[in-house]
Length: 85
Image 1: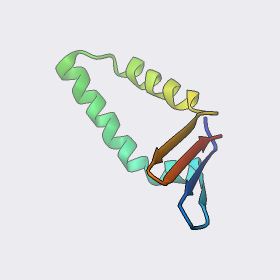
Image 2 (image 1 turned 90 degrees about the vertical axis):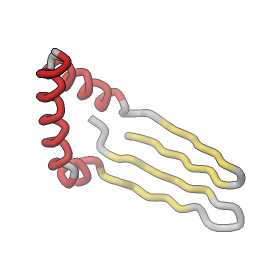
Image 3 (image 1 turned 90 degrees about the horizontal axis):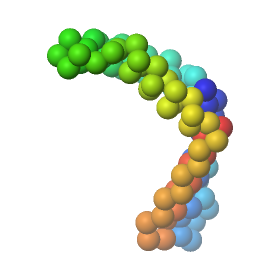
Image 4 (image 1 turned 135 degrees about the vertical axis):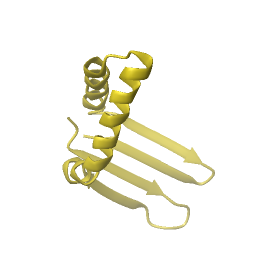
C-alpha cells in the first residue's frame, strides 16, 4: 500500500509548491466514506448480482498497485506533478 503522496505545483514566476501527504492519516479520516462504499457495494450486489468480495478485492489490488505511480499534468504555464510512494 502506498505510504506517501508527493504533490508539486510549478507556477510561472513563483516558487513551486510542494506538499507531502501521508496516506494512512488521510485514509483514517476517509473511513466513513469507506463504510458508505461498502454499503453501496452491498446494494450493487443485490441489484446487479455483483460479487462484493471480488469487487472489493479488485479495488484493493488497484490501490496497492499505485505505489510508484507518477502523474505529470501541464496546463498553460502551470505544471502539477504527483508521485505516489
